[in-house]
Length: 418
Image (cartoon, rainbow, N blue to C red):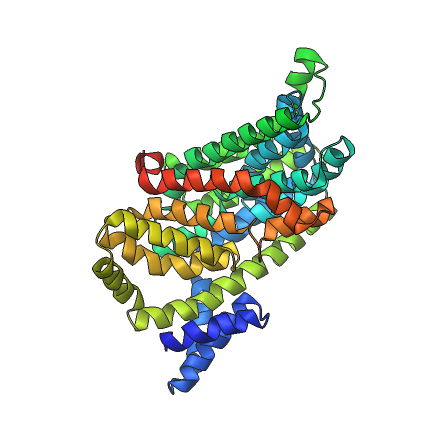
């Protein structure tokens, strides 16, 4: 059955069938050809929805939506402008710093690309930044949120690989900071070389303290999540519920801009995002069941370790596969498909599943701004009204940076296993 899926699934993707329905269709065709009951599909679709840890996903999405429905986003952007806006090319620095901050709120690269892109790209163009460069910075920097807690991709990987979500969250901090600092350096160098403008710093300490006071509740979100998990106060699912309560408290009592219409809008946004994620999770469980039934992960691990003698070459091969898959599949779908397959290979060469998880998320995040699928790339180019080739040209230094950080994660275990 697995061999049928390998041929049918890409074929369905090529004819523009959505990823989730391509998975279900490939599984259904494989079961039908092998004479297996199709009722198995319904059973396997239902199974992942009964996972208690899975509840963390909708609640973290809802917490992010609630925070973004009010003035959280405005305060974060204002503080980022004050923090880095006065440097050469400051408005593009704001995209990077804003993505790091937003990552701790939304947990979604696509949400960050849309929110920050709409807020910053028109202003950047108005102040003399090339549209392609603004789009490139936004599309690349928004993927940092895939590593900053509460990261939805890391939660998904933890669920499919039985890896501690707490360990994944903590391990993602240093790689996320490395990517963020590297992107700031690239942006500053480009601004210096091309003479991009900088904003004047006004207001002194009074403005600093006022903006920090307004932004602090949103900045505190990732520290709240990590601290609560690391000290064993609550499980990831319980923390996600606490995050929703925190977002409501801050919106109602601190910013005082949360109303019923905002809550309803946040619930609607959560429903749309959750539907897109859950249908992929449900569909992937059917594929995973078939692969497990036929012992494909174990056979693949045995074949890889038998064909490639050196562990570093196995890691390189996994990275290449993940980079290719990430260019064609969205991040959640790719994590759910590759996670169960690669954990067996990683175990066979002594690679820790936490390190593998960070490798996988960084690889697949690069795919978010790589054609032909490139979700954050298309969002940013649409907002900037720039062409894909021109944006990809501006993205070249960001690709090299991301690959450098990926190499460090892959071959320096201390970076994630500290």
